[in-house]
Length: 405
Ligand SMILES: Cc1cc2nc3c(=O)[nH]c(=O)nc-3n(C[C@H](O)[C@H](O)[C@H](O)COP(=O)(O)OP(=O)(O)OC[C@H]3O[C@@H](n4cnc5c(N)ncnc54)[C@H](O)[C@@H]3O)c2cc1C
Picture 1 (cartoon, rainbow, N blue to C red):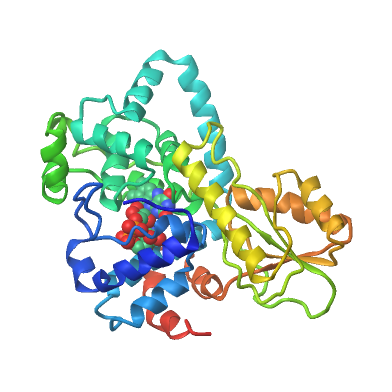
Picture 2 (picture 1 turned 90 degrees about the vertical axis):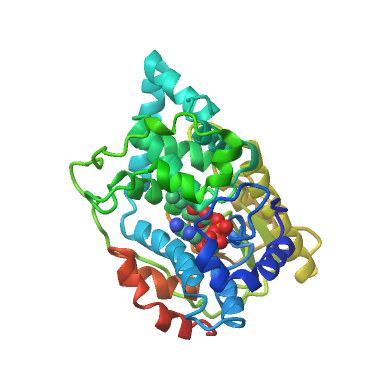
């Protein structure tokens, strides 16, 4: 499977997957058949991650083909993505705390030869657990892993190799094309037993042998007997504090003037209800103290470039600008284009939001307000993502009913 970083390629992927989104997905989605056979899953996550394709578009397309009950499993998976994003919005301190822990653990690894060796073996695919090593190489080589492989990998990393979960999450985030601060950080916490205290995910050789039989056949079963299938869940001193998020509304303030559209890596969809006189984008922000993997960085850069091209063509503009992460660059753009206001999609918790906050503050100081819009899919789903997924899940039928708004 390859992921050309364009909206056209994302829509093509959706079209090709649609016939499989019903019963076939329900029966086969948990199998990791290997990189050359991914027709049992959609492969849409890189496109959804930066909204080259939107969640509501995917859901509407699936509902155009199947009854909600037939595509129930696939629909639920798409809402898992919304759940993690909404949950992080309610517990935003998880993100900076995690980043800080990654920083200090990397410093620790630099000073501790034994930790450095184990960390290096795990990320280079040299642990001797053959199928784990194959997944490590697949991740760095392709930027994608099947969901079940992500679960097994994270579990082996934490409970068998006894490596800090934060360093594993960082390894994933740097290399995944779909690397997402919410889905990734919170899934690692879930595997570790921190999301639902006491409930952790233990990788078992028989389960891997069943759902990844072809992978094990190719890599060999070496090392599977080493898996720790009796480890206890990790614990933390206190659960992350919950806040009441202050999201912007879905509507834009009335008023004329020259409006610029500012895009970012979290949302590259052009439909925000404005007709801009200028379009610009912030580049992908650093995901880690370590560099982002080549494939992941190229995907984000290509996706942003695609959005700028679409924006320029759609509104017949002479140019569309890729800015830097320096807020001063955005101010220079606003001045050059004589903008009265800037419109942008709300940036969820993560590196993109940190970059956006600096831009918003500087533009506001200069008298150019940045109006952020929260898309209706997020506005409907996120408030339900305060505790466990099942609170959101029970609202899915009602949420689907609101899709066409
Ligand atoms: C440790 C770990 C780390 C992960 N890190 C990320 C990440 O950084 N970014 C990311 O997008 N997903 C992450 N996931 C979730 C999931 O593995 C991927 O979304 C999925 O494998 C993407 O492949 P697909 O598009 O073929 O999925 P499909 O099975 O076709 O699912 C359709 C869509 O639903 C969403 N989805 C499916 N499963 C999940 C899930 N468990 N959690 C959240 N959304 C889901 C995705 O947007 C996906 O594109 C992680 C899971 C684990 C266990």
